[in-house]
Length: 272
Length: 169
Image (cartoon, rainbow over all chains, first blue to last red; front, side, top):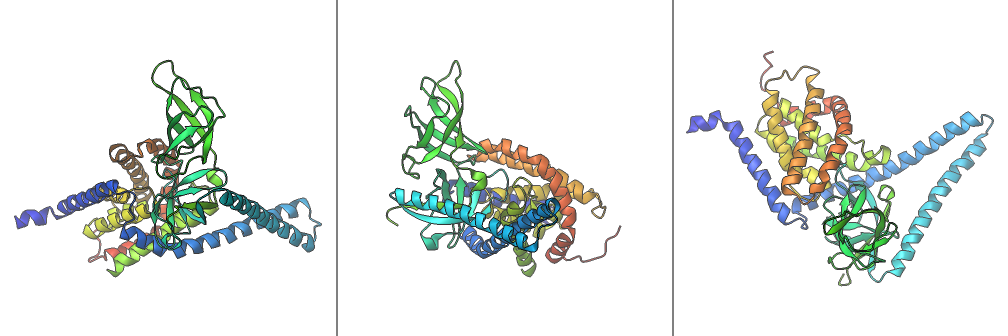
């Protein structure tokens, strides 16, 4: 017996660890919305690292853009003086500040227009894998964030929080393939489920006889227990009405531009 | 214990770069999978129990920063490690071409295991076209990155599994 164990040690170890990995995974499949101690610890550990890297990345990005702009200016206008270069650099910086100001003002206006308490947050990291659509925010349980809270911008729904650590949290974006939200088409009042498909969204269970047209707005239905009613999700961009079957295939263009997300609002529940 | 911690800390730093710095400087689709490359290197050069456990731990680390289900990448990385360790025995790991070739085959195996895992177990079963869409970029980036990361990987593996005797080749 001991000989057998010694001879097949690696294989047995592999099988044991594989079984452990499968058990952990299957257990977590049933408890998706709970953040484990391990996840909390790692997120907490990585939070200052992410904030630091985010700061360095912003500065590097700005320096890089400014440098490139200066190269172009030199090529096009060799007689430009140092004074003009400084002014241009200042102009770029001012434009950046103005854009940020507009964005934050829109968020502030939106925050005042909604009934729920909203917590502004900044995106500090994106998902490690390109096929999952999640982002990490710089606010966590210390700020009152917990799992399953809606995350929005002035344009519409961004997603919901899925994992929370004291100073950071992760958000499942609407475009992720495992994301789903109860929704209503504003004009026809057809109810359905909006699911993510990477870049676009699909509206499932729209009855074939429902009168739906391209351009209709889709908003949250408020029945899923996460999103309040009436938040914009997107606009219908494509309809495929089959000649048979119960439902029609409806595609949406998201209201939020997920490729340019920087600042968001986390909607805290009233009891918080 | 020290080697385990240094390996996990390196993995966290690489993950922070992959999720924080990289997307700010390059397009989001053009990101190599650093942790997969560590697992593949461990499979080739440290095919024992410590490498296997480290692979699982790194998969669990990746789950903190990716996807929705904790344990998903842990399971995939254990399987990738097992396949690499089994296949790596037939190869001369010191050959310069073995490393990029392993990254190439390992990336395909990883993507297929992710797709199968998503289809069989997850509610994100519609994500498989996205995994396949990202495969060509990963096939290009991962072999190049593993060559660039080789000095770091050598150091990590030496710490995780110090060589006892000289190689007999």
